[in-house]
Length: 98
Image 1 (cartoon, rainbow, N blue to C red):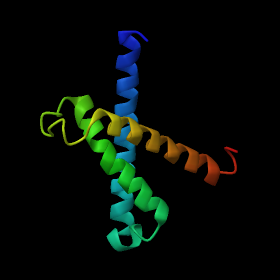
Image 2 (cartoon, one colour):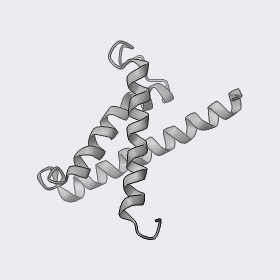
Image 3 (cartoon, rainbow, N blue to C red):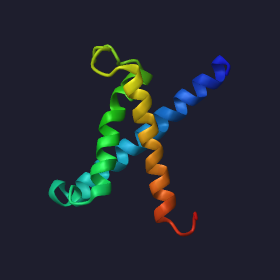
Image 4 (spheres, helix red, strand yellow):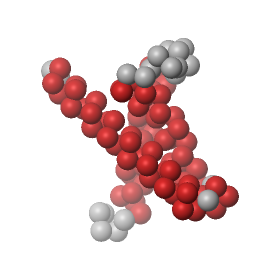
């Protein structure tokens, strides 16, 4: 994979993470904290979004805020896999996509 493809993948990752952060924020505002956290899927989504924030900070160059020892690289790879679960959940819940 060349450098230009890595740049585009990084930008796409940043875009998707930003969308997921906005989605979680709007749902928290709309449902309220107590109602939002009643759903197991909302808890899962929130966890994935919170754990994706260090990767997002790294992508936009704010990784100096968090020391590297807080989120090791292997952990970030595992969290990226967890974000794929969100897409699989969407496919499972949408009969039109099946």
